[in-house]
Length: 296
Image (tube, rainbow, N blue to C red):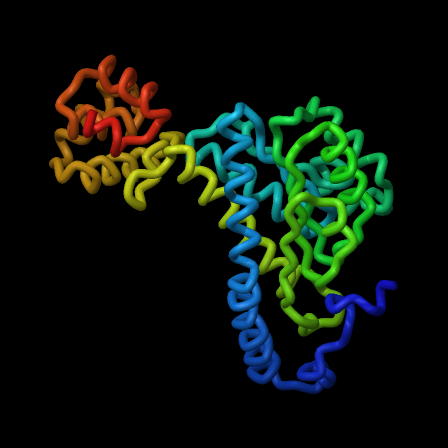
């Protein structure tokens, strides 16, 4: 029952929220938010399992697919749309699905989350395959849209991962790997865009970033596959090349152009003293990882 969920219970520290001063209520919000990272930390072993499974799926040619409703769906979409500029991935490698369709990101679509068949239909529209990994996100852990999606994903052999903010959540029973973040009650009762949403964002950050590191998208702590889609990112790419190779700005600019505006290729050209063609061949052999390509 809904009233039995931790995300729906009342926080004893905020029973008089409406009578607090602004400083008092902001202080208690901040103190409650500070508990989120610790709650996520407790689930790192399960998050690690999920990262390994997602990375394996991507290496097999699969996709990472987030699905959720409301805030949960928006968080998955947010993580998905940030992957192409950050890691140079194809827009269809990491996908975000939200109950009610893309318009629901801006305006709620009432009732969409209550229909399991919509979760199934959205995955079918992507032509879900066994190579894919599906992450169902639901703060309550009981959203029908997500349940339907996870059940369908499992039926086709895809990896299934659940992310909820209640212990012993219903969606946990539908997934191969269950991540349950015990944040405790929200400051504002039932408002899961608060601590629950923050924890979901942290976990999605971990899932995608760690998986992309496992795909060779990072060298040291540098995003070497960043897309040069605006002036800021062009300048960032130059600095990345300089940091990775200790070269000067002129060398970074020149090599970046020779490399077809691909920072990773430019870095390898400088570190290995090779041509564009040789750099591309090395990266092909090392599956995109710079370090082993340099030592070849």
